[in-house]
Amino acid sequence: MDQPETTARGVPLRIFVAAAAGSILAVGLLGALFALFGHKANTSIAVAYYVIGALVVIAGGFPTGGLSFIRMRTTRRQPAGSSGYALPSMLLGALLIGAGALVDLYKPF
Image 1 (cartoon, rainbow, N blue to C red):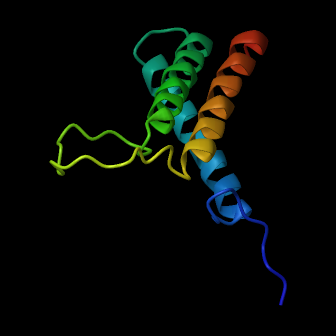
Image 2: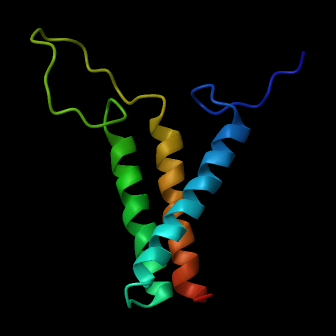
C-alpha cells in the first residue's frame, strides 16, 4: 500500500496544501472586507496578508507551538524545544507574507 507524502509532523501534504490555500483565500477576503470601508483595496489586502502572516510566524516560533500564559507545572523540567508544528506554521506565515508582497507589487485590484 502506498503511503501519502507527509510533512515534518506526519500531516499529509495534500491537507497542508489545502489548508494553506484556504488560509490565503480567507485572509484575502478579510483584506477585501477592510477595503469595503473606504480603504484602497490593494493596500488593505496586502496589509492583511502581512499582519496575519507575521502573527502565524510568531506563533509558530514559540517552543510549544502556541501561547500559554498559565504555568501548570511547578517543578523544573527539561526544555521541550520547538513543536513539530513550528515549521509548517512558519511556512504558512511565509506564504501569507509572500502573497501580500505579490498583491503589493502587482496591484491587481
